[in-house]
Amino acid sequence: QLVIDHQLDVGIALDGDADRVVICDEKGQLMDGDQMLAMIATNWKQRNKLSGGVVATQMSNLGLERYLNGLGLELARTKVGDRYVVEAMREKGWNLGGEQSGHIVMTDYATTGDGLIAALQVLAVIKDSGRPASEASRLFTPLPQYLQNVRYRDGDPLANDNVKSAIAAAESKLNGKGRLLLRKSGTEPLIRVMAEGEDAEQTRMIVAGLCDVIQKAVDAAG
Image (cartoon, rainbow, N blue to C red; front, top):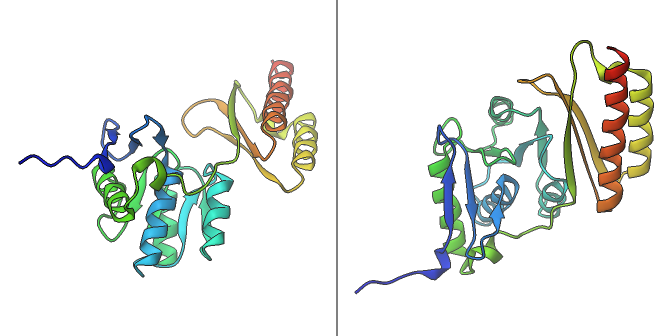
């Protein structure tokens, strides 16, 4: 007799080297690494399996941080890159960390990210919850988050005085109700501009405005 468990109707995809995973629920909605971290952290805390808090990067959504704080858990942020996540986990002695992109590190099972192991753990959490994936994987509502890139040639556009003033003005607009992150890409000549906040339109306008100022600085530098 064939028994089909529709609770686990999900789609799973791994990247080329299988260290990252994305999962979609039975409604076709994607769950990113932030949602997976929330699911696993909640389950492990309930089972007294979580050591300390959770390590994530600067890109992880503020909604995740607020959710974990509500559970009495700390979210420690690192620079973007799984190696920084692993380093922080080792320093703190914590066993769960990851990136929004779906790179989940669970040192109880492996010393680095493994997409297949992460997928199996998420499936176990969904099964343990007794709820469909669409409910089990939505433990918090992400804040609107926007990311845009500006290509540059030489120098450091972020050192430009006009750019610095625009960044200060943007932080003032967010007024502690969001986050702003500007950084150079580690792989391309790009300035990555990310903002998240409770007001979606304001957040989008902040990113667009900053990118405009940065682009003018790049053009002026020739």
